[in-house]
Amino acid sequence: MTRLARVAFALLVLATLGAFVVTQKLKSSPPLVVRPQISSVFSPAPDARVRKARISFWIVHGDDVSVSIVDAEGRIVRRLADGRHVPARRRIVLWWNGRDESGAVVPDGSYRARVALIHQGRTIDLAQPIAVDTRPPRPLVTGVDPHRGDGPAFLPEHGVHALTIRMAGLEGRSAHVLIYRTDVSPPRRVGELPVPFGARTVAWDGTLGGAPAPPGTYLMGLLVADRSGNPGTFPRRLPDARGFVPGPLPGHAGVTVRRLAAAPPLAPVDAGRVAVVLVDARGHAYQWALRRLGDPKVLVRGHGRGARLRVRVPRGQSGLYELALATRDGAYRTSVPLVVRATEPRAVLVVLPALTWQGRNAVDDDGDGMPDTLDTSASGRRASALLARPFANGMPGDVAQEAPLLRFLDDQLVRYDLTTDVALATGAGDGPPLGAHRGVVLAGDPRWITPQLRDKLRRYVRDGGRVWSLGTDALRRTVRLDGDVLSAPSAPQATDALGARPRQPLARASADAPATVTAYDEGDLGLFEGTSGAFSGYTSYETLAGVMPGARLDGEAGVEAGVPVIAAWTLGRGVAIHTGLPQLAAFAQAGDPDAGALVRRIWALLAHGS
Image 1 (tube, rainbow, N blue to C red):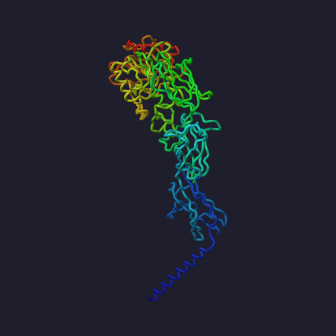
Image 2 (tube, rainbow, N blue to C red):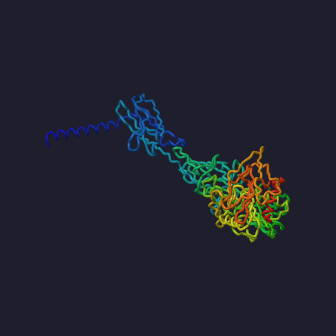
Image 3 (cartoon, one colour):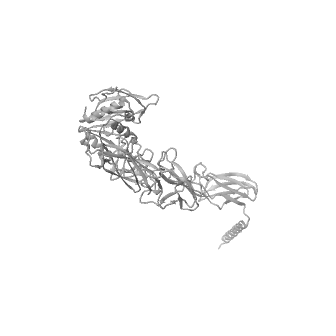
């Protein structure tokens, strides 16, 4: 080894020993930054509870200080203080909002605070890491027990004093079960249950504010916040005043509170025969009464307890009946329609929209806590509905459209055959086929129709039949019927099943200045024969943009010429009639002379062709 090499080696040894001595001295020297207090986790998300990290410490000797945030690789992402003078033993407090020098939110991960003591020439990375966590929890109600099959849990239930709500994804935190009533519009929050820290189940006794929850469909929602304060909810989007679009819901979070409900047959019952009605009274006794819809006279009454109620319907003419049920104490009541058909065929068939009754029936079929209906206007869910289910709110609201027409016909001693679109679509019952009638009346607002029934109606008209549609925004949507399941409701089409092209929404007139619909084309059918040609007092009406190619308008009336509200048109060898006035049947039943004359004239065209 040369002299130069020996000198270099000796210098290296001395430098190494010096560095070791300095390192040991630094290790044994008292810390320069003391008593650090640092937030362990936070979230810069706007709805988090902890949106900033707090960083505080003392320094032993006063100095100018720079404080930076560094990532796991030691790179500076944000400078919080630059050359700030800090006196000795006075706490400095800084805040970091989770953003870098450009103002962008940093990625989730682990960060540290780096303190530079400028005059002392020292840089210290504080030991406590800071976790940035913007990911919210994903809580889930996995089930509500007890429940049977794929449906919801029910209350009240024999022998069950409280339901058990099972949860996952709470991250061991305390939470709240948010109880929503979803069969109302919009859905609303009606109750709350605290979930203890670390618990995975909680019990609900079916009360709200100390009183039994009213009958309805309920969703057990969840709200939980993680350590950084990120809120997580189930469903991801909670009901609010603007509506509810949850999409498909996982888990099994539905509870149905039911005290009394009934499911009548949706096909007509022959007069004088027995109708079998399924009754859910939660195992309790009930009383019932049968009357013709709109008539206060009770025709038959009785008591029951079982799930199958057998009611013998009156002999005689076709009609829509109301079966009213009540619990023994009278605290809960409901009513459902019974469609009765005379055994003697009649020239005109009245069709009731039972598909729409069930399509709008707010019942939770699958137990996810949301009513299953065909109406997708306020929901991102895949729409479907079962036919064989109770009416959640008693008599379908749509019956208010059909009842005035039937009462008017009964008052006029007009005889008719009666069925439902369910019976026509499924072939249920043994009544005469569609083609056995001279005319058909589509009562109410048949919002949905199966493709097969749509085609059958159109063929019926082309082959010489006559059809009158009283509905508005009707016959424009199809729905698939597979066994007992209604599914795949379509969007509204421009042309309805009879070839009309209705405009939506309905035109409106004020109650102070109602509209007058005036005949401006008498046509060859004599549609307005026997009327004054002016129909006044209407506050809503549906206009037509025209009819399908190949159809020819024959008789029109409207608020303005050329824009028909009431119209008849020929299609093939038959005739279709659209009245476009939701109040027409009610006006006729109330004694309005022109409304009554128009209904009688249309009936004559259907029954006799003249």
